[in-house]
Length: 100
Image (cartoon, rainbow, N blue to C red):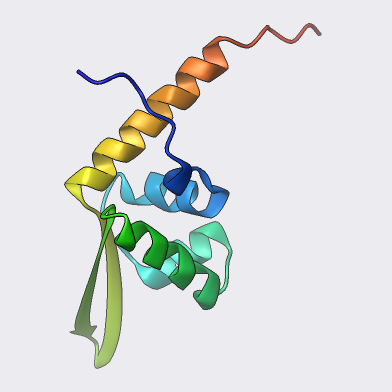
């Protein structure tokens, strides 16, 4: 098993939130946008970055007479996110406890 790796593509706060949301299941673009409280254009930029890295898949489908966009993590995205979270956990474990 590989050691955990800090991934700068995932680490940006918006992309980290997107990966966390999509680690459980596919989600509609609007649901992700509302969950992380950004505009369509900001989410689109994050989606493009994650997609170019091979971490995110975009699926478009008609539903209720409207075109919907669905987002999901690829297997590579799931692995990269899990590794990134493991590295963050490792780093957090090294910190000194905060005294009250």
